[in-house]
Each structure stands twice: as C-alpha cells, then as structure tokens.
Image (tube, rainbow, N blue to C red; front, top):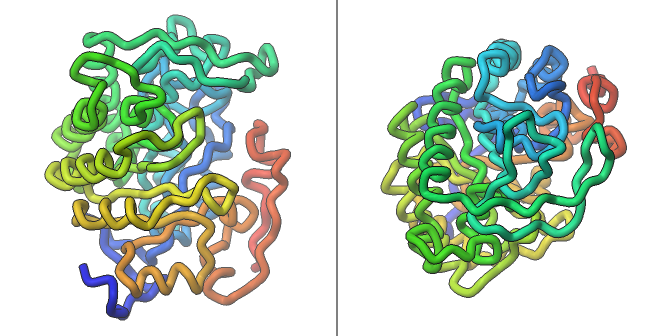
Amino acid sequence: MNVESKQAVDLFGPAQIGNLNLQNRIVMAPMTRSRALNHIPNSIMADYYSQRGSAGLIITEGTSPSPNGLGYSRIPGIFSKEQVEGWKLTTKAVHEKGAKIFIQLMHTGRVGTPVNLPKGGEVVGPSSIQVKGETWTDTKGQQPYAVPREMNSDDIKHAIGEYVQAAKNAVEAGFDGVELHAANGYLLEQFLNANSNQRTDSYGGSNENRNRFVIEVARAVSNAIGKDKVGIRISPYGVFNDTGAFDGIEEQYEILSKELNSIGLVYAHIVNHSSMGAPVVPESVIQKIRKEFKNILILSGGYDKKRAQSDLEDGKGELVAFGRPFIANPDFVIRLKKDQTFAEADQSKFYTPGAEGYSDYPSLN
C-alpha cells in the first residue's frame, strides 16, 4: 500500500473486516476490568460492553482459554459451559447496538500465582523464569509471582488444544471472532520473547523457533473457526511483564508477520503504550509488519481524532483502537465525533468488583 498519498478514509465511516461490516473504524481496545466473579461473565459486563456499542469493533478484556491462564483475580474464562452462557449476555447486547465483538484469548502463562488459579491449575511458561514483583489476590492480598513450570511438548499440544476449544466456545457464545493475545508478556508473547523463552528445543533458540508456538496456535484456531474470525495482538518492544527488546527482534516480527499473513489472519493489532510511559515503538518495525502482513492493521497508542484520521488517510492502518477514554465515556464515539468533553475515569475502580466505576458512567445524553 502506498503510504505517501492521502486516501479518502473517514474514521467515522463504515469499514469491512473479513466478512463483517463495521459501523465505523473505531475499535474499543481490550482492557482488563476484573468484574467476572468466579471467572464467569455476568450481566454487569453485558451492560458495560453494550453501553459502548457505538464502536465499530469491540475487543473484550483478556479471557482465558484455560484454568492455567487465570492468573489475575476475577478475569473471565471461555473454557466452561457456564462461561459460554455468561458471555452470551454480552454478545447479544452488543449486537443489538450495532457493534461487532471479538473475544481476546489471553492465557497469562507465567504471569500468575497458584492463589488465583482454580483447584488443579498450574503456573506454566516456556521457561522456568519468574516474573519480578507481586500480583493482587482477593484472598491473600499482594503475592509474589510464582516460578513457572517449564512446559513440555505434551503441555504445548494441550495448550494449543485449549485455544482451539476456546475459539469454538467463543463462536457458540455469539462472538464474531477471536483475538489471540500475543502481547504484553502473556503466554503467547512469552514464547516469542527471548527474555522469557530460553528453551533449547524446537520452540526456542532462534527467531523461527520462538515464533513456532504462536504460529501453531494461529493455524489451529484458524482451521477450527475460519481465518476470517481470527486476529492477533502483538507488542514488539513492549516491556510489560518483564519482556523488553532483544537482539533480532525486528527480524523476528517480520518473519512472524509473513507467516501470519500466509495463514490469512483477518487482522494484526499493534500495541503501542508509549503514551503511558513505555518505550516508543520504532516506525521501522511497524513498517516491516505492514510490508509482510497484507490484511487489516489496527493501530493503537494514545490517539486523538486528528492523528487517527491522518494515519488512516496515510494508509498506516485500517482501524484505530482507543482504550482508556472508553472507560468513563460509554458514548466515546459520539463525543469524539462532536469534539465534546471527555469524562475522567476513577483509576481506583479499574479492577474492583461491581458496577461502580465500571457500568455506571453516564452518557452526555
């Protein structure tokens, strides 16, 4: 795509992603909100997402495909019948507002503690390398991250199967597709990143080997539910959860993008948290991804209306994701279009249970 000439693209105009028609090019980015008591989605969550149904595409908070992936308190899953039924409330409510919705499949991997996992759950990762710091638990307060058990070949096959079943469950629950969370230091990125993956088998040691698990998951999920229903989120140069840059990172993401393109994933969603203090994502790696990945590219990272419109016109991407502004502004799309004032979110309620600071923010109208 020629990024040097401006194109007639409207941020608020309709768009297409695979076989889906979107009411605009605005994406509500995935944000963990920790409202799923017992890891089961509920009616409060359905209210929250449907209130924000003026977006073109909503991507849910990270949702675990496995009991082992429930590393945080009150994050939802999509591996049990109760969870599938719970999510049906959200998909129905969102579709009634005209938005499309993808579920983000997020296995926390080594980012967790047994205190947060259900009985029989285990903290696992590509290598037995502990994340620094502590995480919140509802029963014991702050707890250190556990030392993960290094996954063996059977564990890897089992995890791939869990992603496949979760994707099938998502379709049953009414989702339009799934986003594989290969960013922010969770299980898929733990395999990608040389700082968390120090394996010496076929899943580590080289760019191609570190890419292998992600590619196998992407291919298996695409085969199970259709490539038009599968996107991926990636965060090259991200530092969250002890990841960070490493030698050959741009070449690795270039190879990865080419492989994902050959599978035919419907979109790639690039994380850029530099607006929140993380390192800037170099334009060079974004250009490499753009060159190799031919389908939809979702841009993110502290966008305002002017910059979003400009980057769309320049062909840098096809959709733009907004995160935190959606929290306190359920009518964010309307406020953005009409240049109206944005409400400020109460950060102390970002991860607390209940409707307060979640589904109780008013619309202007």
